[in-house]
Structure formats: structure tokens, C-alpha cells
Length: 142
Image (cartoon, rainbow, N blue to C red; front, side):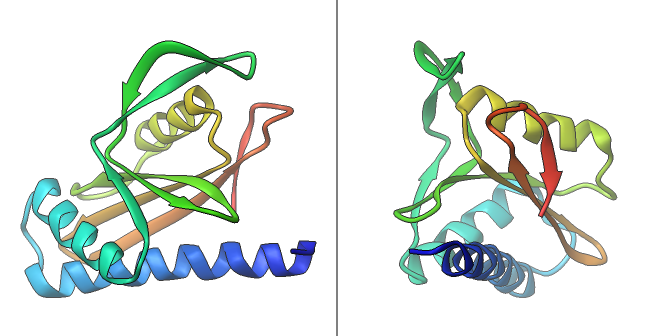
């Protein structure tokens, strides 16, 4: 897969995940808690043939080496081309840097290149896609 195909695959994957989040939100509507939206999102992702890990433990990496210490993630979607995508779910009024830092920390701890922050609130679904530069350790918005 060349670089352009890879970038297109990444954009399509993020869009498919967000589409699944909208489907879950449209089914349950506003006012539910995070767990309810998570339940709907998992079903949607699986119906779209995505491999989903829910509340599973993943190793914490140190200097690129997995340790025996593990961290539990809300959702992780595994893709053969992109690798793992951490999905941090929220059901709050608005996203702030506190929630972004939480996702960035998880991405760094898991040595995971991609992450998504998805918030279900009264106005609908809000999402942010993030990429971790494994060399510098900094995340930037995709």
C-alpha cells in the first residue's frame, strides 16, 4: 500500500467509526450516559466488520518495549493496515484539554499511533482524530 492509499484508508476508517457513532447516537438520542452509547457503538462497529476490543487490557510501553503492566482502554479498533485505534468515549457537555491529554497519554502509553475522542452530548456527536508521532512523542490532530 503506497502513502496515498494509506492516507485514504486512514481517512475512510475514521469516517466509518464516526458514522457508527452517529448511528448509535441517533438510536439512543441525547441524555444517555457513556456506557449506553458505548454499547450501541460496539454493535455498529461490529456490524461494519470492524474488530473491536472493549475494556481490554493492553501493555504499557516503555522506550518502545511492552511491559507486563497493563492499562484498560474504553474501545480499541484493530485494523490490519492502520494497526490499533484507541477510542476514548465521553458523554459530557464539551471536550477540553483534560480529555485530550487523557487520550494522548493512552496513545503514548500503548505506543499506539492513532486515537479518537468521541463525545456524545445534547448537541449530537463530536469527534477528534489524533495521530501520535512515535519519534517525537507528540500528538497532532488529523
